[in-house]
Every structure is written in structure tokens, then in C-alpha cells.
Length: 450
Image 1 (cartoon, rainbow, N blue to C red):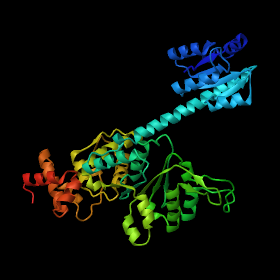
Image 2 (cartoon, rainbow, N blue to C red; image 1 turned 90 degrees about the horizontal axis):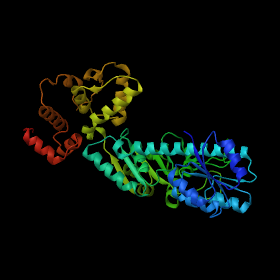
Image 3 (cartoon, rainbow, N blue to C red; image 1 turned 120 degrees about the horizontal axis):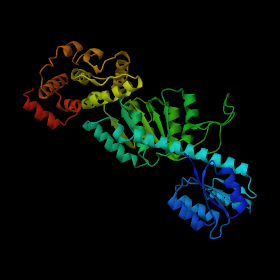
Image 4 (cartoon, rainbow, N blue to C red; image 1 turned 90 degrees about the vertical axis):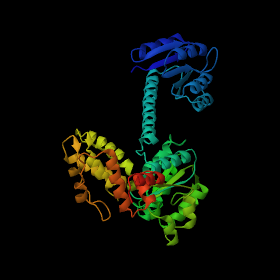
């Protein structure tokens, strides 16, 4: 792609020098006034402007300000024979990429132009990456259709528009970090950092320095200053996973930060203020931890401004086929396999399993199957699951007679088994099947199940 450069200059020698030097490499447009420059900008996609500071009908800085309001992606370089520190500072404050003085050094100009386009390329790549992340963590890309997950989506939408502290709870493997990212990338902070720390993966002394950073000489081995995640996440979001693993000492430090939005680096004496949104997650029951004296009550209520509970996979049974097919496509592409689908019996086998490891366990299972098989359809024989007491066993599953059954018969079979496995608890059965309690009662009566 050839970059287009607009040059606003009235000196013939300077115009000829730029033409002869840059004409073969870039598409050049020349004018002498701001008015003509705006006409060219209307008709052409300009990437960079090189403008004299003093123009017949305006100034380079005034032109720069108007251009930046209309299109912030256009890079502007100011050139003048009246160089001064004041005008240079004014131009840079207004958004100029660089400031050069006459007589123009053409080699210096070439270097500045190359640097400008390199930075523009990097900026565009970062914008594209952020757009991809926003798309990836949009609601349409979180795979769920069950009623209890749709309620989760509604909560995520509500809290994304605020700066409230969020506590995400649920069993291990339910996708708590994915929800945290969805909140961030659907908020007004999406163009800033999303940083994550697993509080259970670091010892206490390292966790504090990872959070708050340290000054040179703060401890043995601190040979230079290091910024912590709290500081690096300024204007963005900090996600603390496994918050229930924090020591009481670290809880106090984080509580103080939450209340004041201020902290000091280890070994430092300067108070640093930041604007960080905090999202935390845990698979523990923090109320029980508070009662046991393992978690501060004031810290718990400070974290629980807005709570989102993620249901386990066994309570969103209708999502299992969607998630399984998603990972089948993903891993088939990754491992260059031509595996197209699951058999009907394979899907039913996935749906009757309890999934103690939730989505993570399902994902790992699908990956392991894709690695070893070389045929277009996955059948129950390829799905190795360890059934616990209370679940339909694999042997029982193999004895199911699928041949000739209608969809209504399959539905009746699944409702019957789920209902009796859960000791006729209608609410729990409805949650597991992903239907309303009233709907379940109607289907039980319709099929004479009781």
C-alpha cells in the first residue's frame, strides 16, 4: 500500500526537494493554503500531512487542531523557518507527531516520516487487536442458551456499564475469567489494560510485590524499580482470581487500596493514586470463610458490591451440545482433522454426565478425543467418562435403545432419569435440564412421570 502525503508549503525549492526525494516512494499532494488543504482532505484519503507553521490563511497549529478533530488517525508534522521552543511545545501539545526547522534536512525528514508510519502501523495493529478481543469476549461468543446463563448475561450487561467492583463465584472450571473479560471488553475501559493475577499461584511475599510493585533496594535482589499490576492496570481492569486464597495480611492491604484507590510500592514512601476497576473470583464460599475466621468480613462486603454466580455445567445441560460442538470445531482446525460432528448417542452421553470439572473438563475431553480419532463422527465409544454413584453408568447408557426413538421419547427418557436421579426434586431437575419449573411439571404430567 502506497501512503499518501499532503504537503502544505509555498517555497519552490522545498517543494522540488520533497518531490525529487519522496516522489517515487509516496503519493504526494501539494498546496499552499489551509483552505485548499481541506478540499484535498475531503476528496482523498490522506495518511500524513507536512505543513509549514505559517500559512497565508492560517497557521500550521490551527490546521493541525482541526484535522485532529476530524480524523485523529492522520499524522501531522510541522515544518517552519521560525523555530522556537515555544512554537515547538505548542505544536506537540496540539498533537503534532514531530517538529522540524528550515532549512529542511531531507534525510531527517525521511527518518521522521518512516518513524511516523511505523508508529501508525503499530497503533493500527493495537486497535485491531483490541477490536478482536472485544469481539471475542462479546456476549455472542460466550456459548450459552440455558435460562440460568441468560440471567448471567443480563447481569454482565448491567454491571459492564458501571465501575462497580464485581465478585464472580462458581465452581472451578465454570468460566469465571471469561465473564470478567466480558465485563471489561463491554465497558468504557475496553481500550485500556485487562490484567489478571491468580492469587493461589503465588506465595504471599511475591503476591504483594506483584500487586503493588517495589522500589530499587526494597529487598535483596530488587536491583531496579518495578511497577505492580495495580499501577499497570490504571484506567483499566484488574482481575484477581482465587481471591479466597489471600492471607489476612494481604486482605488488609487490598482493602485499604479499595477504599482509597491509593497505594505505595514496597520500599517506597510516595502515595500513588490510580483509577482501577477490580473484579475478583473464587470457587470458595466466602461467607463460610468469614465464619471460620479465614476471610475478613469488611473485605468480603467490599468485594461483594455486585455478585455474579456461574452455575455448574450439570445445571445447564442444554448448553453441553453447543459447547462440545464449539470445541470440536476449534480442535479439529488446530490439529488439522476432518471431524464433522457427534452422533446423537454421543451427545446424549455427554448430557447425562455430572461434569465435576465443568467446562474445563469438557474442553479437555474434546481435545483428547480429537487428537486420537480419524473419522468424521464421534460416537459414544470414543467418549471415556467416569460415572459416579447417582449418575447413569456407562454400562446403563450402552443399554439404552436409541433405535427408532422419536425426539419426544428421548425427551421423556432424559426427564425421567434426571428427575429420579435428583430424588424427585423438581426445582433441581428443572435447573439441570435448563427449563422452568412450571414447564417441568407440565412435562411430568404429560408423560405420566411420578
